[in-house]
Image (cartoon, rainbow, N blue to C red; front, side, top):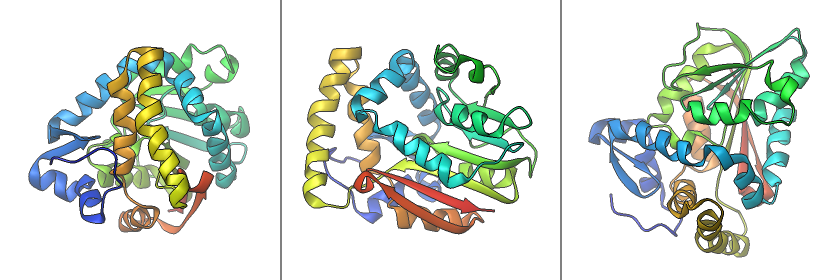
Length: 269
């Protein structure tokens, strides 16, 4: 699938990121890079290996620190309680896990589940909140085959990661499976800004400034070109809502953040 990287794609193109198309055609995309279906997981792993050591620093620089506000908003929406069991899928360096661990306390549990060990290692070694980080369980595993029994967790969450999963519906089905009946699910993900003028500024920043900063700071221009490409191929909030309902979630609501650059979906099993 040959596509240009600076446009917001139509629904037909966006739906090619879903399981049915990927399985039928045995093709998957990582940004505009066309891959064989069974190659995407390895490609994503190599990508995050290459940026793990400075991932948090670059996130803060590129988002001007706003990503922390988005994550705090998502955590507030979950209304976590002491003693609850939380699973942070594709949790990376653990921002959501740390915030959750502080709330559920010693009577609760937080497991960070990610396929990329380098990302988890980078998070475990961060000096900030080191005491809380030691109280998180780190498990390496695939989001499409979560290694926990049915109905285990009170809360499951995934932050800014589902664009990188090969079979998105399968992963959401697994997150639904391990969630207790009545449990809450949070998905934070990037999306399309609402206002056209703001979208134009965002596009300019995404494809002119971000790759340049990635190159200057990390020697990784390609990695920081791929990020905005995956966003422009991703589902709209309404399309993602339909996917959540399709795998069994109910009471699906979403909230746009920073004019829609990010969206927080909250669902109930």
